[in-house]
Amino acid sequence: MNISTAEFICSNTKMEKLPEVRLPEFAFIGRSNVGKSSLINMLTKRKGLAKTSNTPGKTQTINHFIINNNWYLVDLPGYGFAKVAQTTRGTWEKMISQYLQQRLNLMNVFVLVDIRLTPQKNDLNFINRLGELAIPFAIVFTKADKLPKTKIQLQVDAYNKTLLEYWEELPKQFVTSAENALGREELLDYIETISKQYKKP
Ligand code: GTP
Ligand code: MG
Image (cartoon, rainbow, N blue to C red):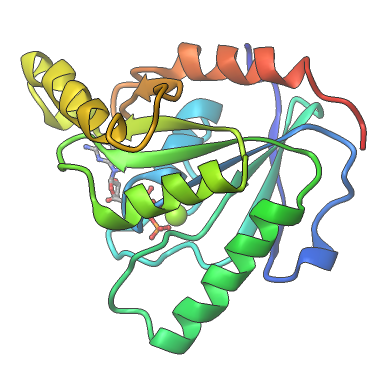
């Protein structure tokens, strides 16, 4: 898929204020600092489109972008950021959970995980929760540029070994880097394929 236009539409904390459900939607989620906003900028080739930061907890709202006037891309706040106050965290979790369960045009959730880490408990909980809710998802390994090529597949294999303790089948997966655009074409082609299955609610 070629990206001809990518525009920010709105930031929200309330479900009723989200853009009208008229196009297929794809959301990106994962722990704080995993690289969600950077991945969005890499996919759209727009450097400052989504705000990135070294400080975890940068994205705190549901952020909608419209791509090619044809689909919505959503940058969600990260989960599992310890430094955020318990009350704020509770509010985010509720907001994300409502979004995931209520958004009728949501076609797929991309769950980002840092390829350098062993499977983290909160990621696994989140992934398993998506399964319980029957929400389609794919796993996106981020920051692959930080590992030597020979280690990448080993990390993916180790991750999958853990997933197979919970799942009979492995979800669709992408290995990516916001630094060198690894995985860009594959991920965008996947979005294009899934978009074709969209039926207006
Ligand atoms: P929150 O909004 O806080 O939840 O974080 P986020 O998941 O949106 O992460 P963000 O994109 O802001 O990136 C966090 C940090 O990781 C930044 O310093 C990025 O430059 C860095 N980073 C993100 N992706 C990559 C990558 O693929 N490779 C490398 N080397 N660094 C990356
Ligand atoms: Mg972010």
